[in-house]
Amino acid sequence: SRGLRVGMFDADMHGPSLPTQLTPLKDRTVELAPDGWSVVPLVFDALKGCQGVKVMSFGWFSRFWLRKDDGEVRGMGGLLATKLLQTTDWGDLDYLVVDTPPGTGDIPIALATKVPLHGAVVVTTPSTLATLDVVRGIR
Image (cartoon, rainbow, N blue to C red; front, side, top):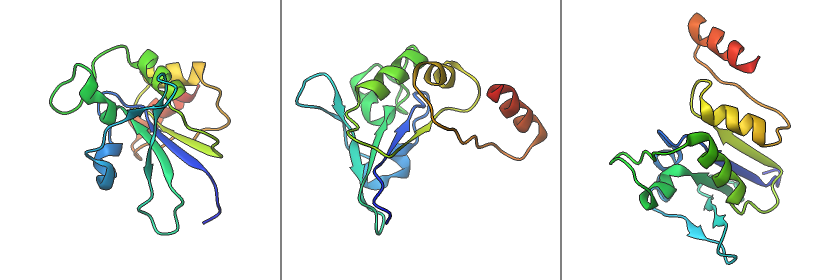
């Protein structure tokens, strides 16, 4: 309702969740932009007062690549996540929320080192071990 332009990128190629969570878009696939190089994000506008959140996930992309039946894409995670983020035609956004897989694997590390960040929110479960892992990952 504030008029902000928001995008959300599901960078978890091993278990993409956006297609499952955004049921109106579950069976959609991505399309190439007119330039033939970038992809057009899907737009989720089913929330009351929402002007449309641009969303991209490996879950919508996976049917074009070698995958298991559950939609998991196989490949070099950090490189593919960075490339998909960079080749998505996001347009002008005020905020881009990036949902990475849990842990300190190649996808979060690649995105943190290759994509300019202006802030981060780290979410974890309230267990001692999970908190220690998150603190280690931030450092």
